[in-house]
Length: 156
Image 1 (cartoon, rainbow, N blue to C red):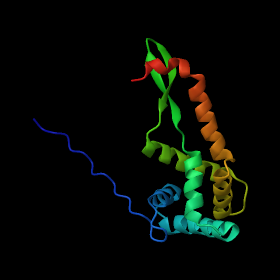
Image 2: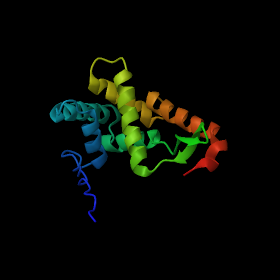
Image 3: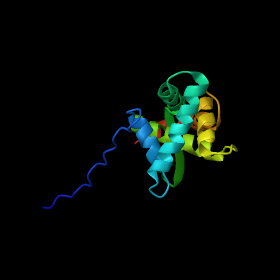
Image 4: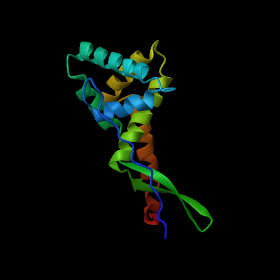
């Protein structure tokens, strides 16, 4: 019998300046068309703005913002006997980080500032103070899970 070959796991290295894994992942999420240097410049400019404005460690503020955005619950569609139910499930740590980064980027792109680094700076500052579009997305996800709590027994 032959065994299925698995694809090797992608290794993400911590980024050079702050040695942060989550920042490295965020750089990869922001990146368009393989332009990593541009993505890094956007993030580093935003972090520099945070450092200048708050006089605190920008990584601490960034991590705080991500932890504020991370969801605890989400809904998954579950088909039972012809009907589709939205079943609330707990979110694993890795997925919650990924969702938080994705929502942060989405909220950043929707902002009406001039440059991407300004947009990112404002969104991270808002998220660290528990406000902004990314936080609203998290609250909406939690509300959806709360309102569908009745279907929690359909978990798989």
